[in-house]
Image (cartoon, rainbow, N blue to C red; front, side, top):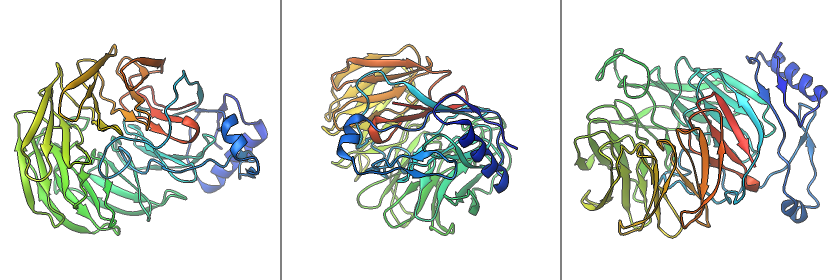
Length: 427
């Protein structure tokens, strides 16, 4: 029988019913706190006076949340711009509930139109929670999960460090298919050891779902898979790809590698161009509306490359490696974090607008809302929000480094993982 530690918001009867359901379905769990269900803001309540709550199988009230633009994949869309249609809180939010796994949560959670959350942990499990923070299901994938999930029409796509990408059913977490990367032996390419920089075939890259349903991800190569999990093509790259691919308006795919290169590949798997540097490209590219590819490098430079031919439009130097993936604001401003503890805001022409200093390296990828408000995490164990002018709006300490990127949902609800093993939900 599952045991849950409730920190508020749901009554013991609802907790017991949720536990009994998990036990009946054979769903594993461990002692972990969950908490308060979502409550709509007064403004939302005024606009939705006729909305009614439906009883869930746990006996709690289900609050119908407006899901205009759910976060269906890492950085929000195939262009990986890191923008959201929901407003980031302007005032300090509170933790309304948190959910514990046994290891750090590195990837960013995905949020579907029903309010269900999907995320992986370095404990090797992939989780789905409902909007009250109750476990819907979890699935052991066999190794650490650095990858952020992508929601497809057929299921949830996510990679793991056992050299495989999986498609899981959204309702029960059943494996629909899995695809092996490689062939690779243990430690192929870079030597044995834990983490995405050590094993070449680890599926640390997050899947991009193209408009035609094709799934793209990196590992020891750039892969294109059909929605049914069959290989369309495999494009060889130099080194491991921790970077997640981005897809342009013409179907071209862009990805960085730890072999010191950024690749542009056509939809049929042919090289369009290659840009080389002497350091790793772990940052995932973002594609701007004018078809510029923005990506960071371990040499501390942010590069703006032409999507057509790969020529350098401009560069901006920071004082540390850039593992953070850039975000593109509604006015074209580009935001990116660096290991030098700074968040940078850069104009479309590459000129620096402002810098904001955190107290630790910034490997979390910033998220920007329609007003230009930016939220991001840092390895100083804090979550930050700054306005479009670079002024601090608030910062909130969490229980560990925040390398996960923030997903923004309805009513300015924030979802983010941390190295203490908790998924935090704030509003």
